[in-house]
Structures are given as C-alpha cells and as structure tokens.
Length: 71
Image (cartoon, rainbow, N blue to C red; front, top):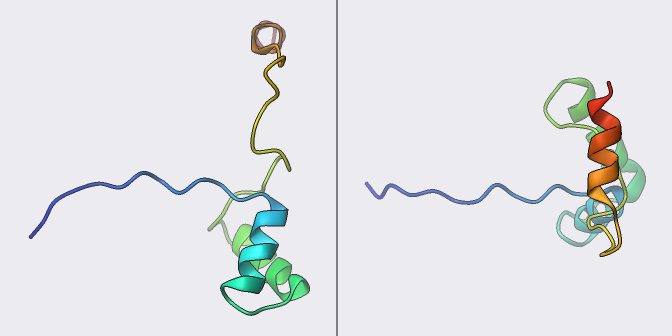
C-alpha cells in the first residue's frame, strides 16, 4: 500500500463550474446549476462567495483585516 497525500482541489467559481459541466460532463448550464443547488442544500458543497479567483496586486489586505478585527 502506498501512502501519500494530494493537495485539495481549488474551489470553482460559477463560470468554471459551468465550463466543466459542459466540457467534461456534457451537461447544460441549467442542469449543472440544478445539481450544484442540490449539493449545496444537502451540505455537500459550499456556496461560491465570489466570482474572482485572485486579488489585484494593489488590494489592501491590511485595511480589510483591521476593519474585520473591530467585529
């Protein structure tokens, strides 16, 4: 038995999810979203909170973190 580990997969935004549903699984966007909704409502996946997968170089993390610390 070989023991190892793999990195967790990167999260999908809605556009990526729809592309994979179409190109890899051959299902349309409405069906893909219906499946995703079912999985979400049953607790298997989390809701995508953003359509962005990266931050601009000028994004000020420090000010955001400072603001969040107040709560």
